[in-house]
Length: 220
Image (tube, rainbow, N blue to C red; front, side, top):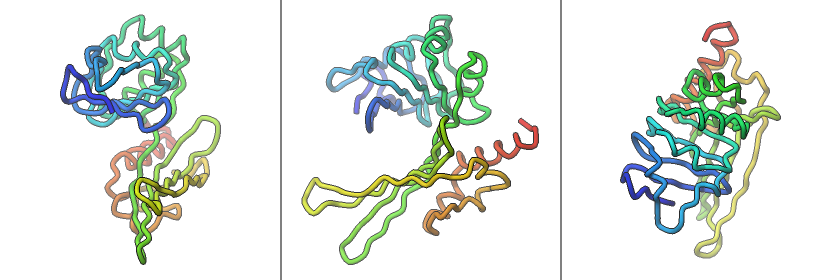
């Protein structure tokens, strides 16, 4: 975890691999790359994600991520300050743009002729406990360019000693047309009943299902 020394509202997290999430509220600028603790190197990351709450990105920030292969732009981002240098950088590196339909991300990909892929959608957490055994599961609806969408389940269980843990990563492939005629109430796909409340409140999933079905009918 890194924290901008320029703006207390901005932080960076890298849960795994080369993915870096930009978190916080409001504007992100090049000065935010001065972050600590430790030595923060943008060139170490191949995927950059602007999460919910970020609204604007000014010039010089994205360009610092010279190894980037994928750019994920949250729905809350309404403005990215573009320059000829940034556009050329994204095109030359054939950066995959991810985000929601009818968003700045999709518009940017279309204007630059870049690949676009809908962003993954967090569905929720469930937990199970019995006779001293505890288990938590995180579910995400995932999309990919080279195959069908799938439900990704990350299962976490505490280990037998302090600091240890177990669990599993499981994937359930979905039909390519899983969303056809589907609304929030119909989105089940073997999800436990505990997920129902979170699903019904999931605005991002609701937008995806609504717009995807509108596009089947030729509407934007």
